[in-house]
Amino acid sequence: MEQKRKPSLTESLATDVSKGSDSYSKLPEKMVRYSRARSRALAILPHVDKEQQKTGSPFLKKVHDDLITCGNYLHFRNYYTVEQIRLIDARFCKKHLFCPLCAIRRGSKQLSSYLTRYKVITGANSNLRPYMITLTVKNGPDLMERYNHLVKSLKKVTKSRSRALSGSRHVTEFSKVQAAVGTYEFTNKKNGWHPHVHIIALCEEMPNQKTLSSEWLKITGDSFIVDVRPIGNPEEPIKGFAEVFKYALKFSDLTLDQQVFAAMALHGKRLLFSLGLFRGVVVPESLLDEPLDDLPYFDIFYRYLDGAGYTNLDS
Image (cartoon, rainbow, N blue to C red; front, side):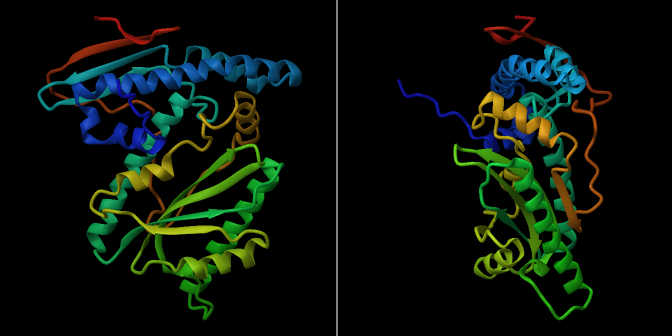
């Protein structure tokens, strides 16, 4: 029997906000993803407890208490006349660096909000095309040192862009960017922490990767690896956007101890930024969906059971 391929993070997130995933037929597939995420959140609990006992951190005590109840039940509403499924009630911990379930919901909210703005921007500026820009810094053993290095370097890039757009003769490749939204991502594949930033950039002309690499090396002093590529279909850019809004911590790539360490270190840090025409996008605080008024529906209830994942209470 052919083994089914596990979808990538970007595929899962793109599916979670696409129109097709809102249909009742796609709900079982979504619940499999949510079950995996909830299982990972519970698996991290002993590691949170170990660190809490070692440090006495009241924050980690709160993380533990919130993770225990996060996503225990999910209440969906099926608006069958319009083939829309909405998650209208659940308890979420909102500790997205510890909890993959909250990371999925948070990422989908961000993705949906910025896609909406993207359509407005490109509708008014048909000459703009979306590009994915990835900026990296050299791996290192100290997560916060590498993160701060990346943040400071990116600030220099955006300041140079602002000066160029204000009339400075010093034009950079990033000056071509008229709108951008980006997020930081962190991995550790046994060769040190690797922070990098994924950026969706809207430009009239594609930035030159070689020139941008040279500029990035001058700014960082130790890093030159950058990537610039067009997003395949400007009319349907959802997978490119999903690459930006996927988890800051790659849960499947980090050990549980690494995840706790990174989540503690990055707690409270700003991991999303925007500039230009993407400034001012408002992402809803709630991880629930808005109900649809005045339409017939029926309710669907799921409860998470250890060893069984999410189980439909009506079945």
